[in-house]
Length: 32
Image (cartoon, rainbow, N blue to C red; front, side):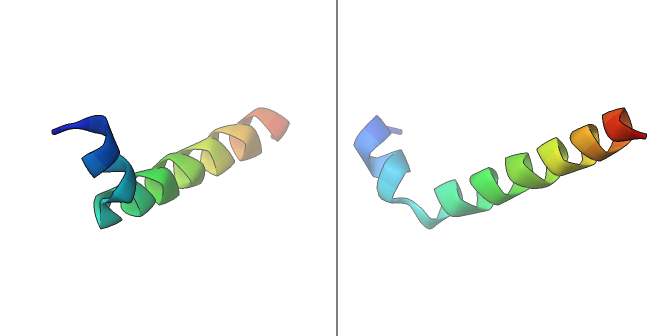
């Protein structure tokens, strides 16, 4: 998939949301 197509894809928001959730979980665990 071309990058510009990926950027405008609704999938991108989905992936970013997933990564954000993972990051929140990780920082929460590290914070203990």
